[in-house]
Image 1 (cartoon, one colour):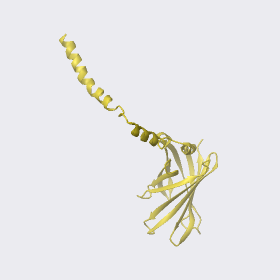
Image 2 (cartoon, one colour):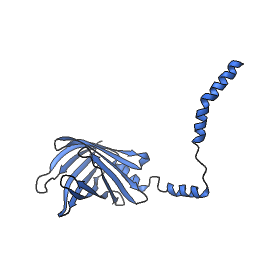
Image 3 (cartoon, helix red, strand yellow):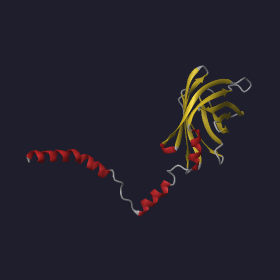
Image 4 (cartoon, helix red, strand yellow):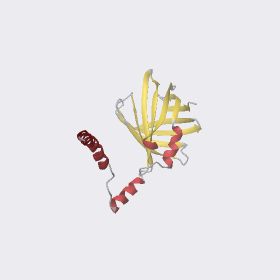
Length: 201
């Protein structure tokens, strides 16, 4: 009898923290105003058609990059691979680039999503060729076959702030092209880079 009582006490002590945590994790009761606010917030929380359009980029790709440091000189070409994966239930999409640029190993990461409240696509870019991040935003046409993003980028070498325009175009069911255009005070916009992506099947 004493052993049974002892066992029951021990089990109660072991289970008590779990039961307490379960009780604490219950959603708080909401009044009508809070419930209405939560319902309104939900309109901006779940993926919509614009997120669905981005799903077609999910997968593995090879790419060929052509860069013009001087618009009057031939382009510098490099190759690599990239993979696009969905994040947070398809609310955002991450692209990881791996390749070679200017004779050096290259890695880059892009994360893009659709901001329902702003009605804009937004994103961020970072790579191992710098310690800065570039944020950008833009719009796409109805079927998502072409998107145009704009950003600004502080060039620490030239000591200027560049205006950047990126155009992403689907050129086939398994190919898409990213074009980079830039301008700065006293300089007309020019094409600086073009990356052609081909799906790995």
